[in-house]
Each structure stands twice: as C-alpha cells, then as structure tokens.
Length: 451
Image (cartoon, rainbow, N blue to C red; front, side, top):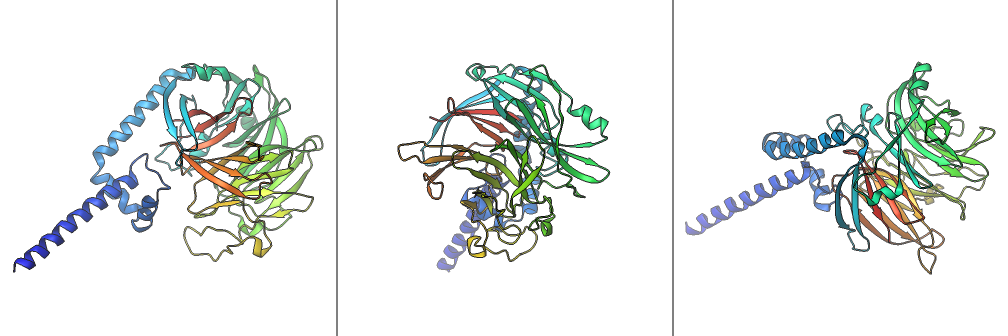
C-alpha cells in the first residue's frame, strides 16, 4: 500500500512538472522576443499547433501579453512624438553566438509607417510598410514602402539624433496619373548619380512591378519610367522579388519572383522566377538565371564576375546562390528541386540540385530563416578569404559566413541574434566598416560597426 502511494505521488509530481514545462514552453513560443531558430522552440512548434498556442496565450497569458503590447505601444508613441528627429532609442552591447563578433548596437527611430502585427507579415497592407536604404557618398538615403524619401549624414550616428531631411518626390503623382494602386516599393539602388526603385502596383491587368529612376537630388527626385517588366499576375503574393543591383557593361540587375506561377518558372519565354540584366542605354534585357522562387537579396562581385542572391524557399530551403553567368542561362532548380517542403502538402521535391543538372546553392537553411539582403566583405585576411553578411526576417539575425578565396567553400559560420527585430534591409559601408539595418517592427535603423 505504501509503495502504491509513493507511485501515485511520483505520478502526480511528474504530471505537475510536465504541465509547468508545457506552460512555460508555450509562453516562450507565443511571447515576443523568443528565438525562432532555437532547437527547443522549433521542436515545440512542430508538436504544438499554432491555434492551440494562441488560444492559451489569449486566455492564460492575457496579462503578460498586454504588458508586452503596452511596452510596444509606448515605443510607437515616442516614435510619432519625435517625428523626423531620428532619436536614439537605445545602445546595447551584443555578441554573436560563437563570440566571434562583438558590437555596440545603436538603434534610431525611422519616421515611416510600421507593419501591422495583427494583419500578419505577409498581408498586402504590410507590403507598403517595407522600407529600404542605400549609401550615397556621406549620406544614408532611405525610402519608405509608401514612397517617402529622406536622408541623413553618416556622421550623425555618433550623436543622439540623426536629424532626417525630407526629399520630395513624384512617386504618388505617378501612381495617381496612371491610376495605379500602390503595392509598395520593393527596393532602392544608387548607381552613378541615379536612384532606381522597383515599384509594385495594381492596374486593370492585375499586379505588376516596374523600375523607375531619378537623378539624385537632395531637393527633389523626379522619377520616370526606366523599365517595364510587362509581367502580370492576378492575385497578391509576397513572392515578388524586386531587388536591384549594379552589373557590368552599363547594366543593372533585377530579380523577379515566381509570384506563385511556378509552372512558368522553368520556361525562358517569361520573367517569372528570373534574374535579368537590363542595358541602361538600350533598355533591352537578358535572362541571366531562372529557377528562383522569391529573391530577397542581391549582390554583384565585380572582380570575380559573380552574381550572388538569397531567396526564400517554401517551408525550409532558403538559399544563398552563386551565379557564374557566362552567356548561358543558369538554372537554380525551383520548383523542381528544393531542400524545403510545401506548407500545405508533401511535395516530392528533388533534393540535390547538382545531381539533377541544377546549380547547387552555396548554403541552404532548414528551417527557413526568412532570408533577406546579402552584402559581402572581400579579402578579409592574408588568405584572401571573404565574409558574407546575410540578414533575416524570421530569425531576427545577421549571419556571418566566412568563405574561401574562390567562394566555393564555407570555412565557418556565426549568427548575431537581435531580439524582436525583423531585418528587412542591410548595407555595409566599405569605407569605415559600418553596417546599417532596417528593423521592421517599429520601424527603426540599426547601426553596428564591423571591426
């Protein structure tokens, strides 16, 4: 009888411990600021349905949830109070997981519209709240998803206020004249005195994306059509691409996502799931690669003549790709080959790209990190090794990937987790080693210096 009672006590105690563990784990899963790439978190997300986790949050954890929301709202109120001051929010010391990189992170307000967390990151409304930046001489230029343009002087990051200056432009006038519904700005890029922007819009034919450009002028930016993709799709999707980059021989590069038209991606008679080069003088284009899903980062290595892009996979399978275009269209496999899976059903993607005559990614991520922009610091040591700087949305991180001189081999990797910060855009300043980031939630500007 005594043994039975002890067994009963052990069962009760074990049950209580399990319940506490589950409750603690659920709170970690649904509260703000948790690391989505943590192994325990990833396991819990697999075994606990999202709907159940949210129901528990909205009942058992309503008070701490409201507390988190209240802190967030306080930050938003401060953002609107300071308008274009670009006030410093915080300075904190942060280190990468393997302690290879140590930074003092500065965060400043950006006077642009924030994403609506209740709408969800993939909503059409939030597509107009994705913002971008570029480095122009001694200035940092920013453009909001709604077309607002501002800049500040780089030296201001040493002060407590960035003091943004507004540059008027005619983007909204163009939208009105053409009777377009804006879908948001998808990228900005400065090249040889011009600002290029990819503009998503909707008209009678459906959704599309074109490039506009303007001579850079701090008083007024007069945008004109530079290149029409003449590529349409019928329903809104986040799989748009839209990244722009300087290329060789007076050309620029543009990424165009598959916009869910996956059956067209492997064909050469359309621009779905492609990277194209555009001649700046003739406005003619060539397809340089195909088999892409949603290219969110783009970089051109001039000395090596290599195009580097990052792109979202389905459920898992985010990729970093190296494109050695030699006149023959390079094929990166989508939707035939992927290291990810479908969200709604099990699709038998081919795994190996190389074994199936596609270009193998240098690196892929399972689970996905929500990969975004990619920058590269070349020749970082006496061995002429290189460093990839890869930003992410879902993982709230910058990934540091050291690669060999020929960019064929990964030497080591590290990750800098920045709590609560979806990183939409990233630029590396080769002059002084500063990394500028667009944080999406507030939104705000993050600044760290790579030593």
